[in-house]
Amino acid sequence: MDVEIIFKIAAIGILTAIVGQILKQTGKEEISTLATLAGLIIVLIMVLNLLADLFTTLKTIFNF
Amino acid sequence: MEIIFKIVAIGIITCLATIIVKPIRADFSIIISIVGGLIILFLVINYLTSVFDIFKSIINLSGINSNLYRLLLKIIGVGYLVEFTAGICSDTGNSSLGDKVLLGGKVIIMVMALPIITSILQIITELLPS
Figure (cartoon, rainbow over the protein chains, first blue to last red):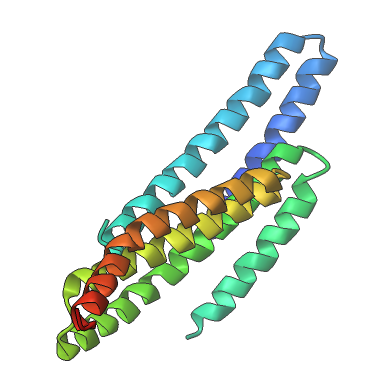
């Protein structure tokens, strides 16, 4: 659990934005939307892992 | 207790990262703020366990039913979780949804606290002269 995941998410966001822009300028609209969607899904999976960790730790701490 | 510097640093870094990412991709900035909150929670949660262990030893000394303590712990957990989720909801602009989450947490806490209330009522009725 460290700060690097924040930088990771920010980097993925900037990277997917750049990739999307480049793909859009080369005329590949569908692939650019797919790329941005893929970045979003990757980040969402990371967040979901964090949330699952939180829920398991909360369950163990609060005796649910 | 030097972890407070870590928490403060994570808060500032998260704010800066959201500011930087927001004009590029607005949806990612919200995710970054959520993750920052989660990391701060993870840092703090270990201290919470030590506090609860101390509470448990005090409860064991006082001879109160440990089920009550467990119930209290659960209620505190529901409170923290609901507060965190409501904060995320209002951060993303769905403040009404956050209010509904808070309402749900209140109802759940009420339901969990009902056994305590009924036991108190039973004690009172036993004490009253019939």
